[in-house]
Length: 104
Image (tube, rainbow, N blue to C red; front, top):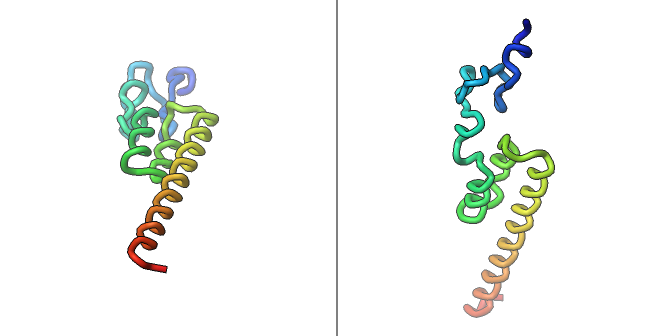
């Protein structure tokens, strides 16, 4: 019996075979299923994107096993669009402050 037949589950990070009862990968230590680190959960990715990290949260989007490829693309595009909007609004605000203070 091969490893794939004995252990049908595989780690989402290192692809090492997992027993059905494993909560963490014995090879790399990553949590599996409900024991996934909090920052790989989609809700927390969105919270981090909206509060402190902005577009720097994109690596978490692409590493999470909780989203399929389409979900990762949609979330990535939404985060990028929001980041561009916020950056543009910030640039306008800086320009307006410069105008008020007598800059060119």
